[in-house]
Image (cartoon, rainbow, N blue to C red; front, side, top):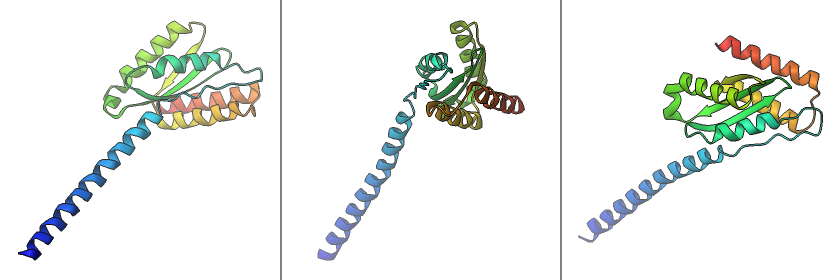
Length: 156
């Protein structure tokens, strides 16, 4: 009788540990998803003003289906890439179209390019970091900008 009680207690304890460790994994995942919501504003001291990109990021990240956003602008064009929450991935085309329309209303003087592609997102992230460190001249920015635009056209 004493052995069965010990065995039952051991199994209950093992089950409790197993269940609690399974729940922790989901909690950490939720925390990391919420960390993506922070917008990184790009500030440069050179001639390349990123105010339009920063304003666009602010507007886009407020949308429910968007988890993260990256954007860079030149004097006439704006490139924006977004990460979409998993469930909303079924509506990528409509999300992209709506974002583009909203941004065209917000900045009618700019030619807007919107992407939901992960590769474009990563390229823009690298370009943002380059701009943040002030290692970019206007000529270099336009070259990188055109490279990313051509990648977007390949994907389309």
